[in-house]
Length: 70
Image (cartoon, rainbow, N blue to C red; front, side, top):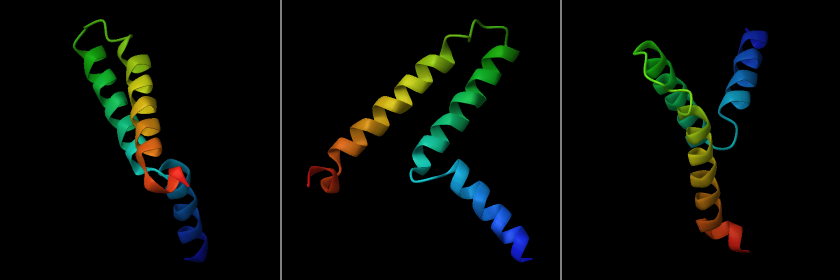
């Protein structure tokens, strides 16, 4: 059981890490990209735009945080 909890803790820390909002943004971007690909819409541009959007939102939240101003 110790190995299983260690394995699950590793994957949680690897995927979620410090900021769970980035992980959610990536999952949503991939899901929307898959949906666009299945609906035969030119969705190839969506993933780079989504990555940029998640990056900008993450940096905005980091700069806005009070502990970042110390």
